[in-house]
Structures are given as structure tokens and as C-alpha cells.
Image 1 (cartoon, rainbow, N blue to C red):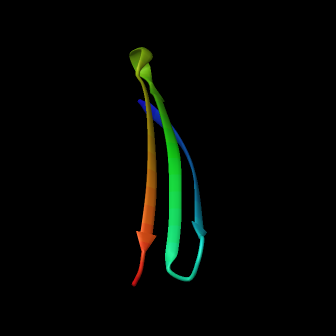
Image 2: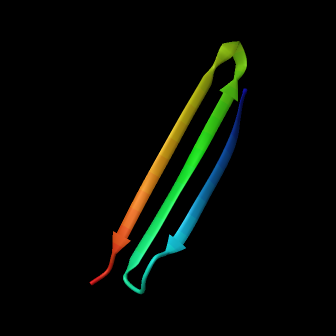
Length: 45
């Protein structure tokens, strides 16, 4: 069994630039634990 909690943010910095990020924490049986993070950037031209 594994439980997960995930939180993130997303924003448009300008008409062409977007930024996002999130963090996730998993906790499970037998002492299992995992933490992940992700950042993203998108530029449209």
C-alpha cells in the first residue's frame, strides 16, 4: 500500500513564457518513502 501527496504551482510570466513546478511525497508499507520534484518552462515563439 502506498499513499501520495502532491502539490504544485503553475504561472504565466508573460504572453510567451510559462513556468510550473510540483513536489510529490509517497509513503508506504515497510518503511517505503519517495520524494519527487519537477520544474518546467515553456517559451512559445
